[in-house]
Length: 159
Image (cartoon, rainbow, N blue to C red; front, top):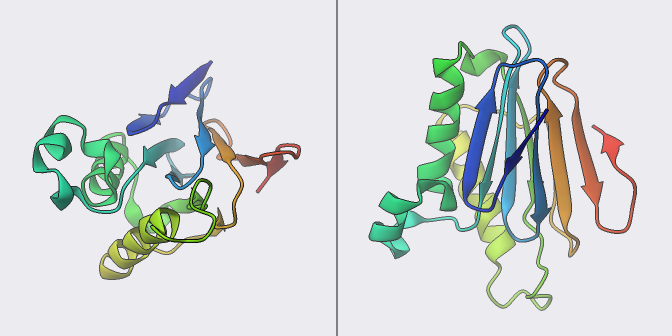
């Protein structure tokens, strides 16, 4: 069974029959977390680094922003029994798709917001596939914690 995470969305699960997937990560970031001890995993697909640009939208759609979405992803995983220091963390996306000259640098800013938050909270990234100018799809298998990434124009690979 597949749970699909849309843009500005988040899903967590401890159901071993499920996988969670998010598609078309361009400048957006797909943050995958997984605790192998309790087999809890989740994905956040956020679009923008900072919710202060639109407080009302941040209240209505907290998963749209790094600073409001990331804490909610971790808290949802904790509610299912995950523990921070056991979690594997994978990051995908942060590309410059429509902005190849880097004028807005949304992808880079999205990634830097995550890095800053992780540094403050002592969270380590285990693996990542970020930057460049290609779309990515990322998937986590809840039963095993296996994470797969597909870059535009190539086959899906296990990380």
